[in-house]
Image (cartoon, rainbow, N blue to C red; front, side, top):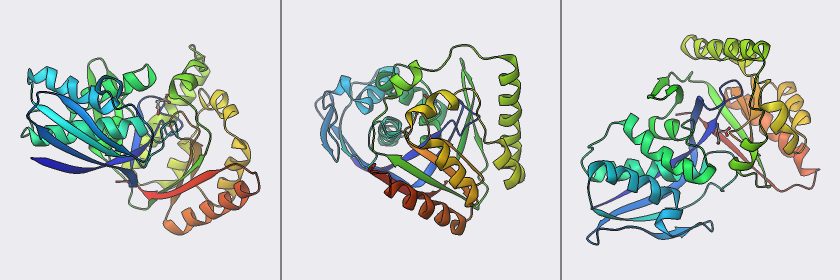
Length: 298
Ligand code: HSE
């Protein structure tokens, strides 16, 4: 028995939701093939597209699947093939896609012993390996689709939020690698009450905007005065890009996950293409290699 899955890229944080909010891109992602074997072993048998560890315990997909099997007390073996299209360290949930795709497929091949919440917790073990921290804001939307909100980490409680139909995301990936581990280490550990008030005001408003399809409110709530000021220093021309996105009609703009990718959330494909084209022209003149993606959320 084998299963081929699409393992989607995700945008985590969405400015005001550090470690608790993320969304799933419907047209950027990896392909994975998972197959049962009779060896009682989880093996990473093939990785194409990127150079990543093949040892099961060093590979996020391997670790996530082993966490699932351990909970089942199962010694069923699996072979995992990954066609990696999302670059590691890009900020669009590369490790999360592999972890989430692997546990999703294995669960299906075992006739679904676990629900989505449990799968999220297994996939988080992959995130722990990749970044030193078991955050869920990439793996949850990769598994559930759409927008996900982590209400609580202990116990884990993840909610799905509605997706306003006209939302389109533009993602710019400057080709520099920023490891999540490193970009987490520079964040301040304490937050002022004033910043916290602004942040939870924005996060609450963002959730409301998703339910009411209030695009303007959504745009106003995409702000982050806690993490973005620190991390944006690592991203070439961040402030210029932000102004450019806004001038071309984006609802909001910020760092995707831990960067270096940035995202612009737009209403409708026409505006998204305008924003993408403006960023392309601007960045082409800066002698930095980059990739641009345009995607729906689903
Ligand atoms: N919330 C995590 C962070 C996402 O910002 O570090 C990592 O992709």
